[in-house]
Length: 122
Image (cartoon, rainbow, N blue to C red; front, side, top):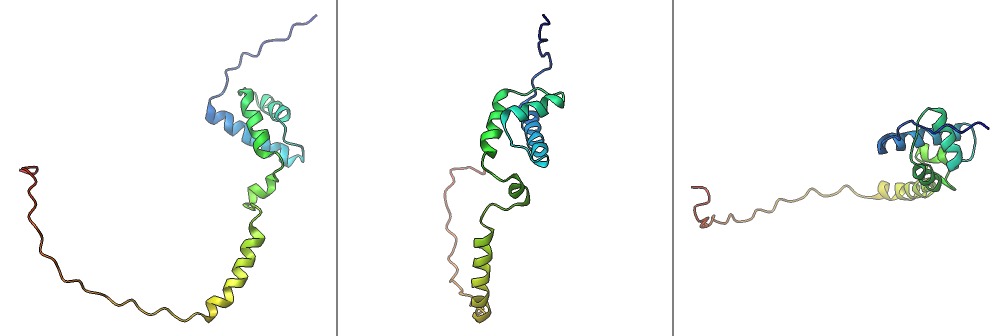
């Protein structure tokens, strides 16, 4: 029987692991595949990288149930609410009067007091 070879590649550091998982998730998204830890690991292995298994699990849980396309385009689900708020506030701003210029209030200048600094700046 053939023995499975041990993977001797060094494990990537944290920044490289995060980047590898991010790119793997984007590749799976572009290929219309589910983002699962096992699939992330396959893509990362195909890129000749080695990451701790925890990273693929973290990315799987973080992206589970999320639409990656919406995350990429900045749609977080609040877009309709933001549009509605903008539409309702537009008439109010048109009706609003120009703000009155602020009047300057002059305070009587108080004389400075001598404070004993105990020779701090001597």
